[in-house]
Length: 138
Image (cartoon, rainbow, N blue to C red):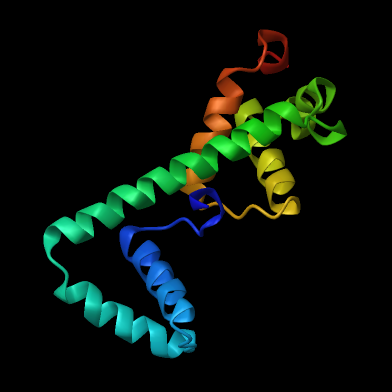
């Protein structure tokens, strides 16, 4: 299931798939052993193989981000109610979007999501863009 894989760059996906392949073969190795092996194999792969894993990585990121967006849209709880979003934008007299992004980050982390700041900012920007004007204006 691509959506449950750790997202990352092409090499990280390659390493994860290599690890799964070794497990299927009955070979269990530590991450300390796997990383140099994967690095060596990755270095010897032709460009089209590396490009395949880079594209796969992008697909995984998209599936993952779509799942997060869907979860947030379909499971609004008290942490993400319109009133809470409105309150987030008025606390501390700060920039509404910055406060929104910070609160969203806290919520996503509490749900087990750990995005890079770049990924988180994209998600927050999108969610902010679909908020009603009355939320943004407070």
